Amino acid sequence: MQAQETATVERIYDEVLRRNPGETEFHQAVREVLDSLAVVLARHGEYAEMKTIERICEPERQIIFRVPWQDDRGEVHINRGFRVEFNSALGPYKGGLRFHPSVNLGIVKFLGFEQIFKNALTGMPIGGGKGGSDFDPKGRSDAEIMRFCQSFMTELYRHLGEYTDVPAGDIGVGTREIGFLFGQYKRITNRYESGVLTGKGLGWGGALVRPEATGYGAAFFAAEMLNVRDQSFDGKRVVISGSGNVAVYAIEKVHQLGGTAVACSDSSGYVVDENGIDLELLKQVKEVERARIEVYADRVGSATFVAGGSIWDVPCDIALPSATQNELDGDAAGTLARNGCAYVVEGANMPSTPDAVGVFREAGIAFAPGKAANAGGVATSALEMQQNASRDRWTFEHSEARLAEIMRDIHNRCHETAGDYGAPGDLVLGANVAGFLRVAEAVHAHGLI
Ligand code: NDP
Ligand code: 2IT
Image 1: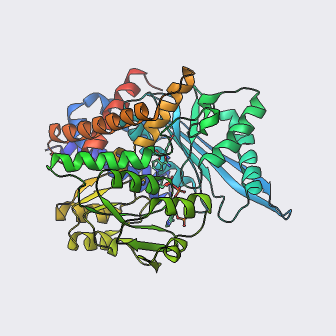
Image 2: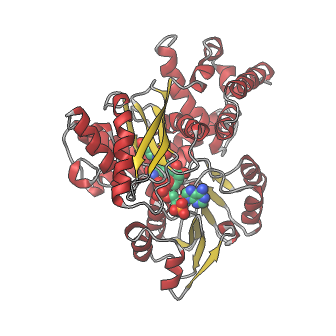
Image 3: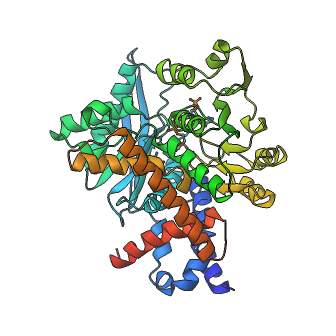
């Protein structure tokens, strides 16, 4: 059918492999998007002619820098900082910062690439970028975190600005870190530029619902998928991996919508609580004490802790992988399918391996990719920017209603685009094509840049 376009897409992928050796997560993210785009080239010859896909696969700018800092004992540490400013066709670069020892250029590029299409899907005026460091915040004191953040921002500030590049949080970066980063930006630039970072504290320019937004948004997205199938969260067993920002608020909204989240995890293992995860206790353990998930099971009689292992062994109707990339592989997907799981909705970025996605397809499991299902976080960041720009402050109810509406719109756009491009029900294709079309139109309009 589209033999020529398929060949073009393969050529583009080969070139991405050649120019970005060793960046396996970036290759994976590009492959997954390119697999959806032959149908687009067949309808839009101008994007082939102007090499629009090739241009989108090449970041506009990649910044790598040294981050020296001193720990509480006086020992000197050198980390590496990254910011990949991937695409600014739709607005200033926008996307989180990740602090985790696994961070490298390939991971930041996969996240930045995904962010372009995710941000496009929100319908908000934001481009795509991502950054972070291989700094490991685990076990570090507040003073160490502060010194690291100050050193990181001392280099990064020159690349940022409310009209240029607007970071936020991701793994290992929450309100505490955004506070230290904002303070240092303000000190260096002598500007109270609220719109330069999102995920700020409520007392200094932050927005209500931003902390909850990614988890709530993923649950809203799942509710839309259920709704299309005349179902609801009522009585459904839900397994949610991770126990960080996304997982905690996904659990909260799942419970409010009538489901029961029976398991969650961290990198040490998982807990199962058949009574449903006690959210107040989980927040106390993970957000206040910053302790390991095992502590939850120590304090709740109905809960058990499993060290290591796979949380996907826990039977469920709905799975919300919300920890990290490639956490759910083909074997885990097979287990979910055998246990009767009917929905997988990605709270994290690219948590399912390509094998896993293949298993979901074969098993008829309804699947939502992260770039659609977890877009509520960045969409609410855009609402924070909007409130900062107008020096306004919206209520929780108003902000949550906007988030719910945005998630419904994203779901519907993906669903309709999938149908329009000959793949009804395929939210992977729908998200890739709908996101790509919005970016490509703007890239094309701006000329050869
Ligand atoms: P947090 O740092 O708040 O929490 C991360 C959670 O995932 C922790 O429970 C952590 O366990 C676990 N985790 C992280 N890395 C690994 C790993 N390599 N192996 C096993 N478990 C791991 O991050 P967030 O909740 O913010 O982010 C979770 C996911 O959601 C990421 O993929 C992120 O990119 C994505 N996301 C986040 C958004 C946001 O607004 N925060 C928006 C959209 C997507 P441990 O503490 O033991 O490391
Ligand atoms: O992956 C993501 O969308 C985020 N970490 C949130 C980005 C943002 O700018 O709010």
